[in-house]
Image (cartoon, rainbow, N blue to C red; front, side, top):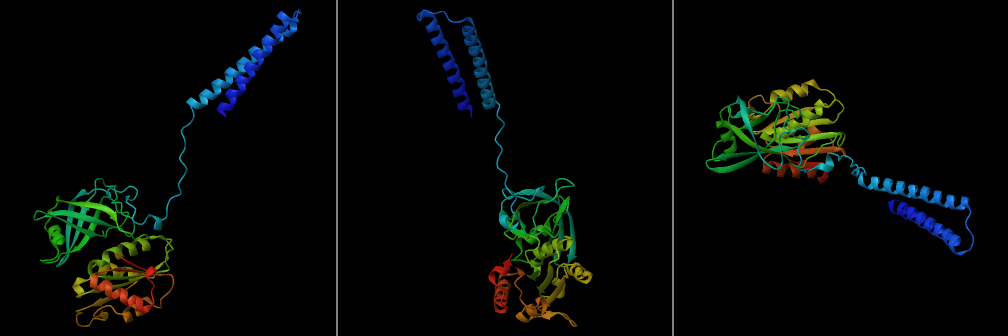
Length: 336
């Protein structure tokens, strides 16, 4: 557009000047004086077209110099499934996948002989950790001069403000290096946290039935998922949990799980416990989780079922074999 306008203006001026030159030539060399009106009209035409050309030049130049900044094409937001593994924290969060951030211990509660609930403070009372559903964090610490890192899933709600909580079982040596370090922390001591980490991504309606099999502390990512779905008024996904432990005292969050199951509600949440060493009078499952346990508690295999696994490696391996025997497809199973 700019080049065309310049060319049009230039051609008009050149043509007019040429026409005026011809008129002048006729007047000087043709032996006839031009009519006064013709000379006056030629002058007026030159002036008018000259002004038009000038205005066009000004307009085009202004558009070039003061053109608005280019607007980037809009990008539709990606679904949760499309952002699996994305290295960006949730909106408003205070953690980053790129570097560790220190958070101070503000409370420590002994929930059993070997389990602790740790609460860590966030920078402001209205801050959130910034952990999307199904993701976890990495905790880093210096223990005996060595850097130790462990993955943990907070048990506090995703929208909890001002703090986050970790429910951790303290193991004796030679295992549990991080858990013993956390147990030794004093109020005000800090841990380093990085995240969100993980690849699980949940979108409402992606499954009709979420089936969870967890062992020991593997309950923490399940707790995050099931409490988030129950808290969502529009999510009616059926929720079923099989939780395996050694003894009754090892069951984490049992009171809370039983309360959710008793409440019923839109998700029809149910929980079934399996113990290696049950107490006298135990009415739950005994031994290891079997295909019979899974079939009885989850019901027939359906196409809209999603199975979540989190436990010790030997347990996960055994559960994958059990699920394959029952007919669950690989695409229906996610292992934390």
